[in-house]
Image 1 (tube, rainbow over the protein chains, first blue to last red):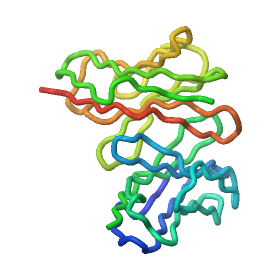
Image 2 (image 1 turned 90 degrees about the horizontal axis):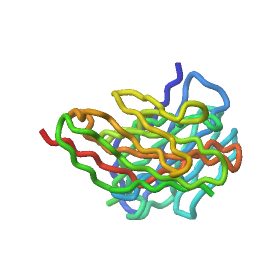
Image 3 (image 1 turned 45 degrees about the horizontal axis):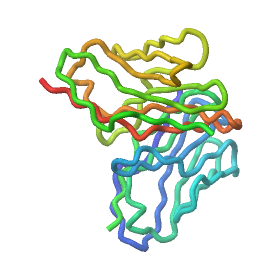
Image 4 (image 1 turned 180 degrees about the vertical axis):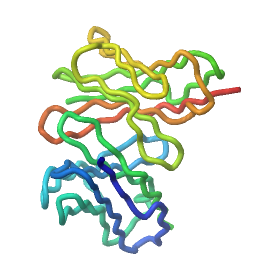
Length: 111
Length: 115
């Protein structure tokens, strides 16, 4: 069966520090991969998605970037965090026209 | 472009009462629709989905939803609320404008269940 792993579960980082969140999927090949951010009271905002290795699409301009170095690995990064980057980050995988399957999320607090 | 509107950011029901969470969508193509549930500090769990076929869809935990094309709605219901149903619920539509698999989510509805 397919599983998705996302870490860390919580993270507290100072403003200006770098960020790296990692997500891996097991039990499937060539999945679509997604990073969503959930801010309080604002639903889920799609940040990045990837339909293949090295293929990254950004949905909104921001201080973050994403990379997909391997088929089942998706990384969310920032060189310098802002206070506004705080939120709950969710990684997900799926196939076209199918449900998405979510990781357990990372709670990021930028101080 | 597709979009989703969830009516009511907070819904409160008594234990044992009917749960009704409203979702309306906008889509230029036949939609694929989903309901997800999220418990505090956890990811989203799929409750049910509609793609094609029967318009009344049954999901996990006793939830069901009915796709009504004429009303562009996909409301989520459960006949009798349980305390464990307290959570946040998201309606989503699949972006079928390309082979990206993206889901577009509503703003979410927080369900409170009172004893």
